[in-house]
Length: 130
Image 1 (cartoon, rainbow, N blue to C red):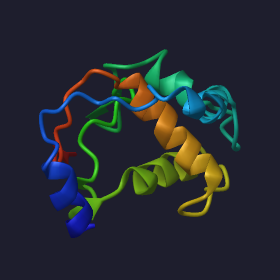
Image 2 (cartoon, helix red, strand yellow):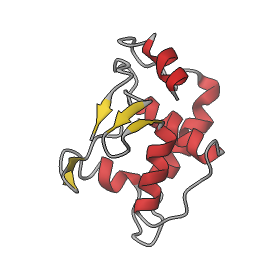
Image 3 (cartoon, one colour):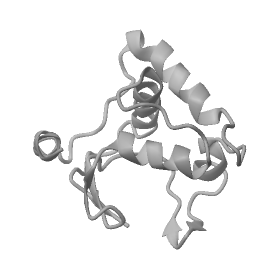
Image 4 (cartoon, one colour):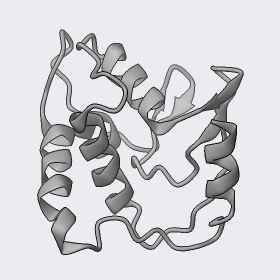
């Protein structure tokens, strides 16, 4: 994780260009479908929080617009550096759904879609979040 943060830090301030490659379009679309899909015992989709309720609070923390510009980042909750996939798995577990395995196609597609949402925003790795 430290090596990932070091490499990503070299791009700090560079605009995110994820999803610009037309060959990635099917994978971005699969990630978008997963973002919109309700799942788990709470029957929630990512969009229910990050599109419908952004800038509100959940357990005292602000709900973001799901633009992961700072990953890998240091989360106070974890007391360590963590990946976007770690955060996604925590969200999925939080809605009481079965989390995908690290490196699974679903998590990679969701990561790609989220980065495409942040297209044009600057990389801010390594960031700090609550």
